[in-house]
Image (cartoon, rainbow, N blue to C red; front, side):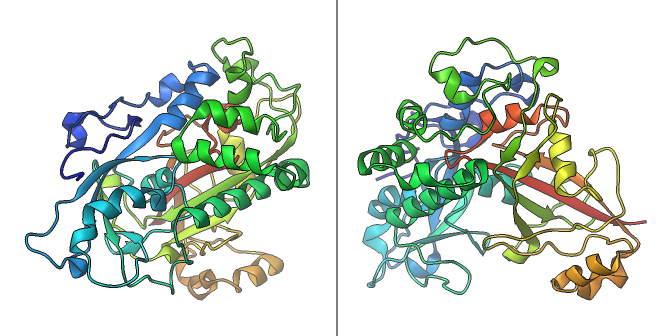
Length: 404
């Protein structure tokens, strides 16, 4: 029984015991400050990403409790690069004796919001908890799967193929084809997935090196996590010596509108995914030989609106939705051209175009792997050291809106 003690899952947590609550015998390590990340060698950064974990306190939904007293919540460490359904083998034995009769269809929610199982746990936490909640209180359900808001998931096999499909998509963005993924042997595919499932960086590097998915060209001066792990000379990365090579970088953007909130503590919880815009768009890193920063990447996504956090813009958030995402709610569009306006009318933003013309939108916060980075960090370093095992960089962006 997991009870109130942390399950023996090794990993680095995002808060020490006195902050996160629960204690136990887990390996609690505080993540580095954003100012420290640029001083790390690539191997250190990769280890922090792979060992990063979130303390979770998981409750069984009250409608599924059939015994008295109710079972205590389970406390586990959820891997940042993992997925919530992969915790089922730990949770099911803990809650099984109290479940009502029926077939298990496991899903999770946070404050009533069904959680998308194919989004990495760390991304869900960054996106839904602007002010980090430790431990993160989630509810698990074994019945009444919300098929109207979540795609079906029967367990690990669904998560595995979702991961492989993301890997194929990343390969296509990087190389223009996904042959390296399609031609993987069964043994390599198994070893790759097991490395993600168990969080073993060594095994992952061994297999991924054969996929030829280097996000940056070989002439780029930034050393990738993989290169570092395989023995490339290590030294601290110096921003003015980092040169980005041309290429297409797989990025998933998650943009959350937080209304007119001025502080992270004032942000209300969301109850539907329509309040978040999911943008699946690669970054074109096409200025060869020059420094390409996180700020450049943001401006390449939404040049009319995204500015450094200290400044404000008065334009629309022109989103290009991909996958199963949704449009962000209106955030103050400016006067648009005919073609722009035609595109806008196809989304829900068009309905509120007139009433939001006098609003300003600004970026409150950007989080990648739980870290708030400086805008001038070389984007090549961010990609090569903070990307997920599916070769996508997942970026959570909080946007506030205020009247002029």
